[in-house]
Image (cartoon, rainbow, N blue to C red; front, side, top):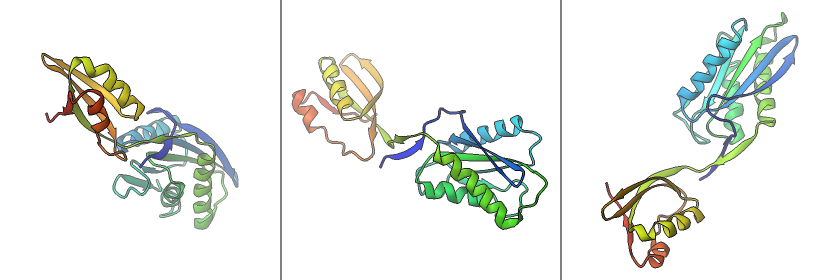
Length: 205
């Protein structure tokens, strides 16, 4: 099933700022297709704000409801007051492939554990309120073998069904198209076979 993700390129982030009791909370929100993508943004946040008190974080490197490729960190704040509340906001948003770093500059007034949890949650919620998103469709790779004469029509048929052609391998007997097929769409070739008079078939490498 398709799900929303941040409309941000790899290595980019959206920045928002929240001030509570003189402490400044700067939130970087990013697209995190993989855990390594998020770690790179976290490293950039640490490099850009070396004097900050904390660089707390949370990410979901997968679809909504992902339970394995996730993570969160309090980065020195009292246990459970930053990373987990941030993650819970991400989890409840319905977004996938998303991560947040909240950079805190301490303002001299202690917020207490409850106040900290609310502040970090609010910082992430505020960031998500203005985040632009787009739909991501999970896909699996497969291959089609067909004659040269049918390639143009096959490509048009595939495009009309949101099937992406990622590669083409030309040989003596025809062409093999590598496809990124949407996981939520049945792999039914009958309509294309009828158009090409049967001159198309699944290819097994």
